[in-house]
Length: 323
Image (cartoon, rainbow, N blue to C red; front, side):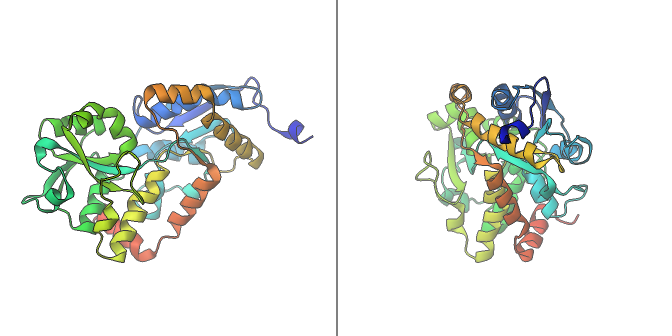
């Protein structure tokens, strides 16, 4: 009888709205999930992916918040930095991300800082001792490449000059290789795939990881928290970098989606993460699969909303300084 009550998606089309451009990490994961998700939903619906780009995924966020029908047929995936933007009261973020129905993440991301050998920043000792601020590439506020250097500069007093305005991490890599900047900080899961040749040859070096414990790939690279001299600095790194980064790529349904449909989608998402076809595809593309459930994502977001107010105001000061 329980099965009879479960929603069926037979003959339906499920859309995954991606708040980022085609060909990027969000898009790559969404399309891979889309190719396998339908098999795990009752009635085997067709799944299509649509890109809705703009304002650091805020345009897609607003669409999913107030315009997409809560009928279980529209999924979203966009950066978890939008959650932080709401917490920090960023201008224009007039949605309540707590009302989204979180479905899960396909991979837990971890932020590291990587520089070219030519820049001379091949260890933390060299970074700390740099005579001039180290030029780091960033896209725009609200993105890892821009926010993480700002937080590290404030929390650890590192010599950093942030150069913003790059379109994405591909452009930052090119700028690093041409000597325009020394490097930057973003997800190791992306760096190890997109910058693999330079890592192997030693032309680029990862010198710091903003993670709670060392990654298996980087056992000797020091942790940012080990350079923090105060409890506030440790808290800024934890809440500003680590917590949002493990849920960087969340999938969710619009507010008000019926609970039975949320449960069916959560179950299908977890089954998709174990699907041999998806795992094979991820392996070929060198993409990590390290999922979290919707319930776990929800818990982390609750935790972010209960950050100490003094840390919130400090992060706001760092990330959105008054002009």
